Image (cartoon, rainbow, N blue to C red):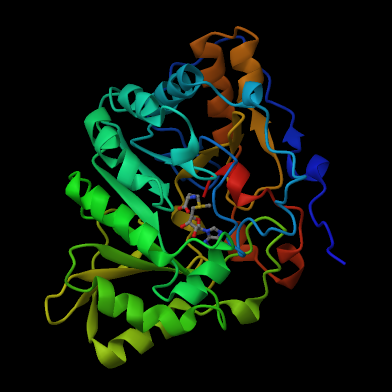
Length: 362
Ligand code: SAM
């Protein structure tokens, strides 16, 4: 019998918002948390819906036809998202990533991009499964998007169909990558989540395929996000092992990070055929340099990917609060942030009722 593992009430719990101070401080662009970490990146989930049912993210046993996705009225509008993005920019955010769910399922997404790229000095990007790119890539580029990340876990059709669980063939994603490159959205980052026994045999074929293509393949350790994917430490292929396997066929050397706090560790092929990245959030936690905030589809702020609850900013927007008031609340939330889940991860924490990635944004 299929067991339903996430009670919705637990999944979408909210914390009480900090009170609005009487004297409203002007943002300094240097907002720090209790560990001295600045807020630099904002990930925005624009929909909790997806056209894939990846077994490690939105397993069909939970996200089935009876699953209650958010009603349209709950979603932040593009105007609300842009307003919050501007407030975060004043606090120091310089990079926004649109995600989900599958962000390209959100109708007229290019209109949101047009609004976000107008924020001074803001880099805007998105993460997608790529299937809708042949239809959307040119419009995204025209709207001002300059680069994006495509998720692809295997080049082998049988394996990929098992992983996305919607019978989507690899060719559809490869067409999406080609369309994005043709529209001028390259170099493209390709994200591969590696799960032992499921697709780790695809590490080398993926490396061979994307070497020399100009695109950057990144291997992500399977994480215990949410509480529906049955995560076990044994299923994680440590990045060290991924690198060993690649190095044995194509020698690689470490490259300096592009900036402090970069999540992916960079490696280049010694024969000049480009670079790869590894994202080791399980075996080498990077909480100490984490500068990411997350805005859920319905406008709750989460200060950690592994959070159990968020802060309902939408209620402030819809109650007619001023920019200065909302900004002060964001400041107080970030000031009190102490999250460092990945440093504390254990068999016990893996079972906590954490928020699902499709809701909070990957
Ligand atoms: N639908 C889009 C996509 O497929 O890229 C964006 C949302 S998805 C949640 C964002 C990223 O999170 C994808 O690269 C996905 O592979 C990754 N992801 C999801 N669940 C994960 C897990 N349990 N461990 C590691 N990465 C995961």
